[in-house]
Image 1 (cartoon, rainbow, N blue to C red):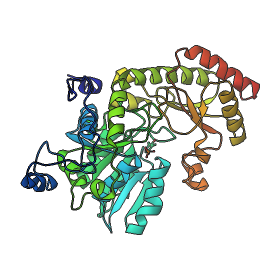
Image 2: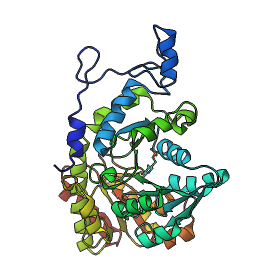
Image 3: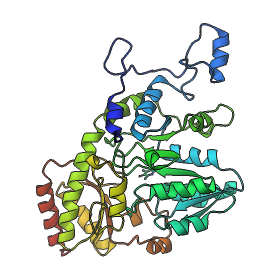
Length: 399
Ligand SMILES: *Cc1c(COP(=O)(O)O)cnc(C)c1O
């Protein structure tokens, strides 16, 4: 049977302390023990079902982690206080001084800055490559390489990673393939395609309410245990632990993710097709003109579509800014970073979320000044949205 990520979330059963249909929230940072011996065993990680201290683990965090690992098809997962709070411990757990990372060059600005500016201080070096070219990726691998890092659908250029091909390279060279799947939850299941570790910023589609930051690392029991090890675990010791109240609220939002993703994808596909016909430079993986359209199709769980992210190039930063301001005035969305909200969000990545990337390199990778990144919302009437957006563009002589 095909892998059904949403069913896997839905089939989990949790009950609250008083028979509630939602699990009880563990509103405590520390836990009491009847015996001192059990406390010692719990600290050492040898007492199943016992809790010691909420940075180590808490029932609410375990519930959310269980649901997310069911979604990704991994053995288990660890939730974190933010997406960066998931990415940085994974890299630091797998690499030490003298190690090397091969990373896609089109990745989230924060991840790029971490690998480019921060990890060199710890003598961890990174080679940034065009992830769509497997031969270039392989040529960058060195004897001290530990990680192959990419996003399934990249931010903000929407390049698609060939996860199967990359996982074969990773296996051949004894590396861990780490995939950030933030842009394509449910649509793409990287672990099923061979990724060793799957990361999400829960801040985006998964929570979908733009009311919190959060993250998750999905992987094998062994790797997650390592991250949580009290002696040398990066999640445990760097302390990017999610709060229990947030874990409970994200779990509730996760249950409607499959419905939201279908609507985001449907709306984005509609607009992308229209804008392309209108002659705008439109990038959306669902368009046949997208260089990785067939690759995305070959990897996707079809029900959920090609996702809610698209970009449009309107020629110049000036035009992009004018258009975004006008669209906001007309209540077609918000001029804001982030993604996965019920409202459409738009921003110019070159001057916002990807501003960590030097201008030269932005040009090199095809990140142009006039690029607007859209996270398409859950609009009930996308035809109306299109008509209004088009009239904004006509008013500004973009169309
Ligand atoms: C937002 C984002 C992150 C970082 O997540 P935070 O929750 O903001 O720390 C990482 N990767 C991608 C692809 C993102 O969009």
